[in-house]
Image 1 (cartoon, rainbow, N blue to C red):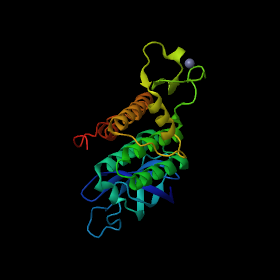
Image 2: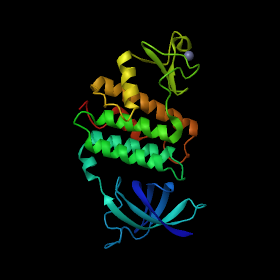
Image 3: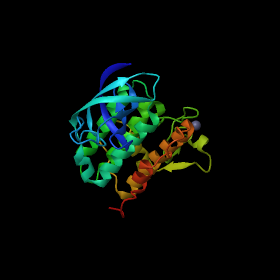
Image 4: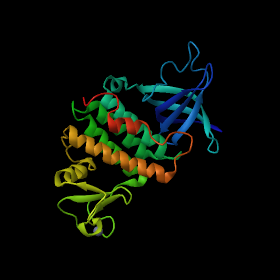
Length: 258
Ligand SMILES: [Zn+2]
């Protein structure tokens, strides 16, 4: 066992005992890790208020690769990101990103995924009013992409043929289908504008598409189905419901259409 130090974001915390919490951390250097923070609930705890959901900082862990539960020695906050909690749309998007990290990222070094996760949180903080959904959709796609599930959007996922007009999308196959492969009843149909928006959402360099409420809902639905499909395929870890934050974000379950 060794004491290691890594940039990290708090994904979730659970009360463990009178004085301790278990935290799930997205770390840059060790992937997603669970750690016990002993004494965190004592008055004058050395952790202070640092261990809040979405807090970013530097974690010091007593780390042993073969162990499921590490010990958190310290967490020095760089950024609390409390402003995300001021807006339910942004917060729900951040929770959906956190859930993808929690359930799809392995406990192994994955700096690209950590980076994409942080960029997603920052994009949500900075998003123009009304664009929080588009920002969340973009970074969910980019995050699942770096985790190895990038959708194929340019040509047919089955035979590489060109696609045009209204484009079919297969969640199960992970990409678009040409007219021949889509058949008469394609699984999901993307009208030309929705297809162009999907391509732009998956391209970090492209301008973020302006999505009205109906189109934002359709794009939330598509990425949520995509994530759920891959979670089912991975089988989950059996301890938690397969997805909750993503469902809440997809349905905007906290209010009426705002
Ligand atoms: Zn095809």
